[in-house]
Length: 207
Image (cartoon, rainbow, N blue to C red):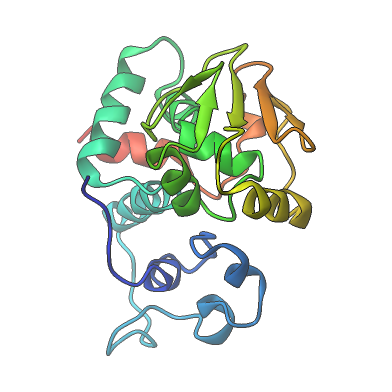
């Protein structure tokens, strides 16, 4: 499975915001944004004028990096969003939110989406009683997402849930003691609290 292998803190610095890619480290003063809040590279401190295309590209890169997708995966998701009824940009974010790895992160089972992806691929997660090891699996209303009773990550998940780093969105229900979550409904745009202007992503792909 292809994945980004370089230093992820550089991605946050490039976008100029916290993307929360390193779990608990992002909440400390060791976070790269706290220590060096400028673009990485030799000319990182120099100011450059950003073109309209550059703004569109940055929004696309930001969304792609937040959810941990590579270009081909992201483009395929956009193509699906474009085929569905409704506003393409909102459809895109809703599809990304319904990925199983993102749902695990939103429930608080994992400190980052990268850790959530590891939990899924290594077979620690059940969806409605069935083991699912595909991070891009899209949950639907009524699905029950749970840590497997035989998982070796019981303590780790309990620690992550107890840390309470983020609020569980209203379209999900969390049963913390049972390490289980329920998909109550589909996410609405106002439920998706990420710093991305999705319309700029649509404009970029519409060229």
